[in-house]
Structure formats: C-alpha cells, structure tokens
Length: 370
Image 1 (cartoon, rainbow, N blue to C red):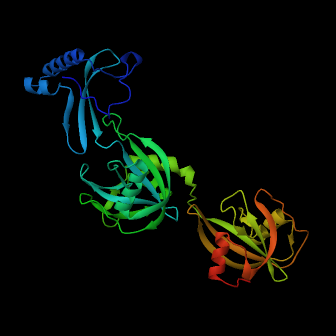
Image 2: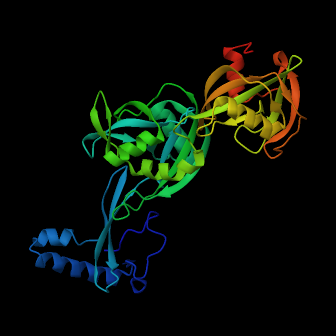
Image 3: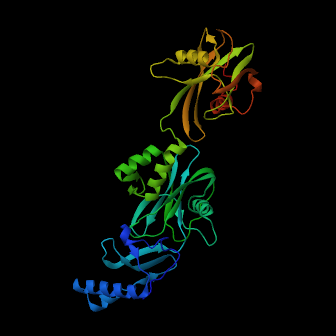
C-alpha cells in the first residue's frame, strides 16, 4: 500500500544515512517493509489478523479533527519498520498568553476529557478555514475569555509532542485592552478565567499545581504556558515586587519644576525630579540626592507630602513618596540629558501633558498636595 502523502507530511523525507528516520515512498519498498513489520509482530506473538492490520501503512484512522498515519521507514541503524504520526486537520494550532493591564497573566480553568481532570491552561484552538494564525489567536481568546487584545506579539512555534504529533502550535502574547462576555463553544468545559503573577505561576509549575477553592489542587502542566512564559518574561519585564520611588516637588514663586522624560519607561511624559529609594537611605536623603544629580539644585529644606500607588504600563509597580522642596540654591541645569529633555517651571493648575502616571494619580487624588 502506498503511504498517504498529505500536506502535514514533514518537509523532508529524511535520510537514514544522516542519522535520521527516513520515510520510504517507493511502492515496492513500502510493500517489503510492511511484510517485514508483519513478520516482526508475528514473532512477538500477535495474531495473523492483528499483525497484518498493524503493519499496513497509510491513513489508519481520521475524523474531522485528527489524522493518524503510519509510515514505512528506515531507521538510522539501517533496519526497516513502520512509525506512527498524529496530525491535526488544521494547518496549525494557536495559543495565547493574555497579559492583563496590571501585568498579571490570565488562564482558563478547563476540564479536559483526555486527562479527566481540571487543568490550568492558556486559551487555545485552531484557525477556521482561510483564517490566519494571528486572527485565530485573537478569536480564541475572545471566545473563551471575553478578553480582547490591543497588542499581539508572536513568541514563535512549538511542537506539543515531537514523538507522536507532527503538528505545531503558534504561540502569542497578547496585551489585554478590553473585556466583554465570553462565548465558548458548546463542547468546552471552562470554569472561568483566573489571573496570576508570573511569580505565582512559576511557584505553581515547580509544585505542579495551583490550588483554587472550588476545585482544590488543579494541575498546572500546560506546555504552551511554559513555553510562553519563558519567551515573554524578559520581553514584558514585569517586576513582581513593587519599588519605592521618590518624587521631588520643587516650588518657586507659585510654580513647580518639571522635565520631559526620555530614554526610559514612560518616555515623553512630564515628571518631577526623582528616582529610586536606595537601600539604607532616608526619603529626605533620596530627595536631596536625586534633585542635585538631575538639576544641580541643592535643597535647603525637605518636607513630606503625599504618596501614590501605581502600576505603570502594566509592567512596573511603584509606590511613590512625594517630598516638597521650597528652599534651594544653585543654578538649574539639565545634568542627565539622556533621561530628561530639559527643566521648565509650570503653574500647578496648568501642567503640561501627558503627565507621568504617579503625578497624574497625585493630581486626581489630591488636587492641592502642597
């Protein structure tokens, strides 16, 4: 029997002389290999009927989702036999890692028929007819979770099981922009979506489960999730632990000092002088240091103002402590031109836009912080 040569067949038939498993397509050689495999099964004690059927090549079975094929092959040792492959009817599957605005990852809680268990998984599926991989990922996410993405990035492709499955899955990361009602297919058993920090997911993968009240210890062993986390972690640069920032509100003649950020996160926004609180440093010391480093001004007095709690761009989490300086000396300079386009004085009621997120939060929560 001639093997069924279809589009899912691997791009190369391979060469056993190069250490590969070579697929044989010559009808005479295929028939000889089938006979060899049949005799091998008979020698193992299988019945004549089973040995015959289990050595025939071609399409063993198929339905609307799957195709099971058996190939005549030559192994690297030079021995011949048969080898099975499974493939999906769709050209490739898709899976998407949804990244929420706060940087957390959304997962489905699925009941899977094959494992007979609840599983933590990425939204996934296959493309419809004439549908591209990217559109399929967006659609599957919306159907299963109700989430829509404002940005989609390819993370590459992976094969779920190279020993059996010839199909590949295209993996994406999607930054969620909106949420609506989910519309899963009738055959899907999805309990809901849950969000986790990357740190929580890594702990879960190490333990093998993440516990949820309604289901207990739910396995987390989705290979697409593991692949996506590995690929995307450095890309999104989510900082799991909040950092402490210090913003310096410098006042002079009813105006406040502001600079336009450049070369870092939130570039193009207007912000006060300021930076990170260093280990062992007091907030007052930090304010004086940052002010001098960035502007050349030396604070003569520093007093405490208010604070804000912000997740910036869904990537960085800062608690910002604001300090007021209304007495200072020195000449105003732009000492870090790679970080700031220049310093300007502005009236508090008429600040330039767009504002750095912590300052925007400060104005909303406290219209008059000094």
